[in-house]
Image (cartoon, rainbow, N blue to C red):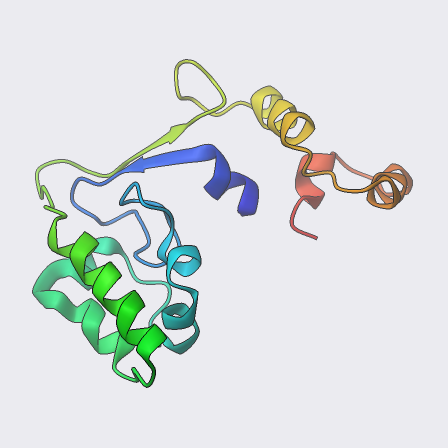
Length: 141
């Protein structure tokens, strides 16, 4: 999943595809990385942007604020969320950044792994030689 999130660009339309905390739909980075202390206390981590932004329900999932760091991250998140309009007439779009046309291909995913160094250290490379199956399937292990 890390390769997918690092290799795609999500443009929010109706907000039904992008995940509020896990995807970089705002252009400021995924909130799980941008606001790590809030992510730790969040109770609803897999909800869509639409479900969280409509009626400001994203605030309910962060109701256990207990530190100045939580407050700082909350205000940062509120600033970004407050400037995000949803367009119910247009679905979210996901673009693969490793090809010029934005379409995913196995070849481009393999190239992304080779280019980004996600295969890891020399020891990890030796382990991958002993396993079976395409390396793209072993990225998150």
